[in-house]
Image (cartoon, rainbow, N blue to C red):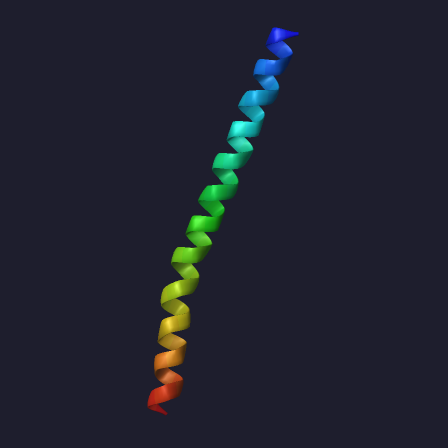
Length: 44
């Protein structure tokens, strides 16, 4: 039972870390692109 719980906990932690990493990467990619697009539109 203990080993089973540990495996579930490790998998959960990996899922959380991957999800947070993806979200942070998306935020970093989206922010500059959005700013540039807004800047271009305003200039035009």
